[in-house]
Image (cartoon, rainbow, N blue to C red; front, side, top):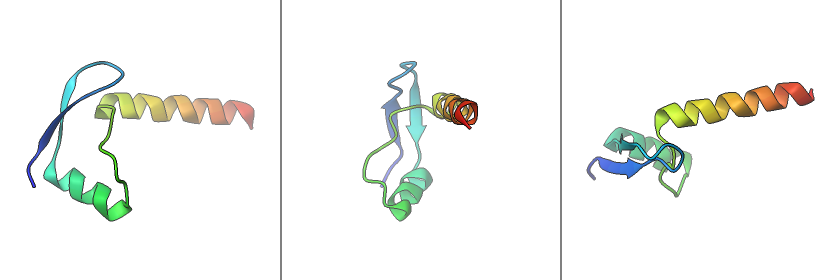
Length: 56
């Protein structure tokens, strides 16, 4: 297994999906590769947390 170069669906930047990350995803049972770069994933999580906290 080798590192993969993927393109973020939000910002369009290329990012590396490393062998270690691929192994982690497989161990967690995830079948799909990530669609967002780490920065956009972090921003998306923050948006969800803010939205969820707003509704509490």
